[in-house]
Length: 397
Image (cartoon, rainbow, N blue to C red):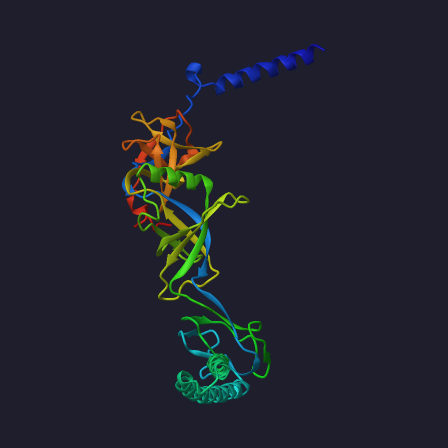
């Protein structure tokens, strides 16, 4: 038992000597290294003249869309495919021949009407001579009054018969002319819907369609909030209505950057759609290169108000907190401050800041994930953001 106690005493003494040897002189612990302030990139807001706008989605429609039907019945003998070259899907001019119906029946009807008119005129000419002789004999009482009245009545009936025959001839000429179907307007013709040899019913059988391409319409729906805003601006004199001046509008297609097509507002509906709470508007756009076609999806940009000076900050610098937009700015002590802001339209890659920001503020544009309000940072000035602005305040993407 005594030996075991001596062994444990020696072991404890050795452990104490070992611990004492590992302790640094002076008995102090090494100081903890300080954490360096994070480095962020900051930029000044951009001051630029901008025009506010609202964006909508819409679609294009032809200014004129005509469904071609024949005015007379008959068998089709010539169509778009029979032309050289084939007219299907091509642009045609007003008055260009598209279809032809067998004219022989209508030609015979015209000939019959001409003969009937000739007969009626000959009858009238004979009765005119009888009436003239009766008028000469009536004063001398060489002809009875009843006979004279009979001749005069027959003459009037002959005159009416001539008019009836003339009307029948005019109708026969129209029917004959309608056997040849011409383009009612300039435009692009669709495919041929019926082949030669088939029976065409007057005013019923569709033959093809024609749509005009230049200019072209674009329709879009204006929401009630924006409509009320625009009307208040018109009343205050900040904006002119489409009836007072030409209001520009811009259009972009699915594969286009920005809004390269410029047109004018030419129509606004007279009431809102109760189902959607929107007002239908229409813009008209020149289309000389035929880029636009009826039925296309279109992005519409409507300028709201006139040009004005504004502060702009990079869109990627903006954060969102429960629907409230904010920026991180750096003060003169290099401390991060949380700044709530009100935003306006997007101008290229810059966002208009309507309130909450000054021209001298330094906005954090890079390193946002490393900062929080109140900490100290090492700000580095970023290159000017002016090159990220769109070249045009209204046609920007």
